[in-house]
Amino acid sequence: MPTLKTLSILQIGAAPEGTQETLNKILSYEDQIIASQSDILVMPEAILGGYPKGESFGTQLGFRTESGREIYKNYFENALDISGPEIDSLCGLSARANTSIVAGIIEKSGSTLYCTAIFIDPKNGLIDKHRKLMPTGSERLIWGQGDGSTLPVVDTNAGKAGAAICWENYMPLLRTAMYSKGIEIWCAPTVDARPVWQSTMQHIALEGRCFVVSACQYQPSPEKLGLTVENWPAKEALITGGSVIIGPLGEKLAGPLLNEEGLISATVDLDDIARARYDLDVVGHYARPDIFQLSVNETPRQSVTTFTESDD
Image (cartoon, rainbow, N blue to C red):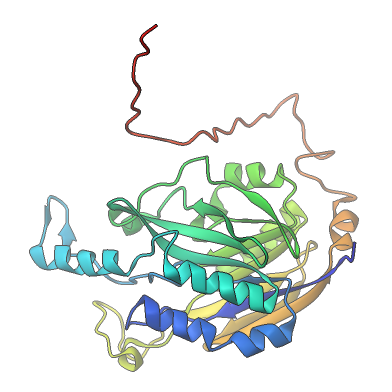
């Protein structure tokens, strides 16, 4: 099989007008995506559904406001059903561009929202998903916790790919679980635009000896978006981007892309993974299972289980 693969990132921001307008923005890049001949295209965290940076949803310790409940209702209405038309549109883009897609969405399941990464195959459509295990800080107000049943590493046009969303990348046991599945393309949808994020991505590439593809949103200033964000300078970008592609020895291959939207790509050789793991394989020859072991529970977590007693 060919080992040369093209990895790409679409760095854009969720549109304040809502999910449909964001989807339109994604589709406006179709010609560029096709021209890039990407084997995998990664999009940022919560790109469909939105990341409501700076929003408190009217919550303080011990009480919620009615106006905050209304804001949450509107956010809930912009979230996606996993079988909805927006997913179908991304599947169509994947098929037309012949590229695997990993994209961050806000998933609606019953009355709960999840920060989710979806995996789309150009021939088979939606093939899997990963729900963020640990929403960070105030994210816990609006998103549920994923469980171990959505920790896939899937075959894509670019190789074996998995996803860790934003600060999940700081969970060392999660990283170890993903490395154990033979991940080759580490996808990191995020909204973390801090300079130190680049160091985190380089560390994961070096630790896992894999390619890292980190897609960050770019959001211009509240003034340009026509928004008012509490305690945020009106002229300062909400999220500055920083999408980056890194090789298995920590070298930056594309990006970071800062302060603008755009598509970035890098053509890589998957054989570089074997070369890099020659002297470090953290779940193989560099592990010490006689001292350290990790147990991972991948059973679905359900609050209600219904059964009927048999007549026997």
